[in-house]
Length: 70
Image (cartoon, rainbow, N blue to C red):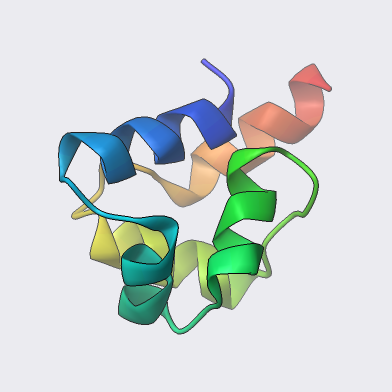
């Protein structure tokens, strides 16, 4: 599964908007949209914040698996 899809699934399954999830991790709606669509790669700190906000459902290593597959 592509990481953006995994993040989008988490957001959708939890009835969040990109804007609401962005507020949880300290990012804008546009930034979250770019992560979901694979147009932007998060910093390590942002990966950690996403990991924490999703309670481990989207992991830091998921982002690196995506980079290898691309």
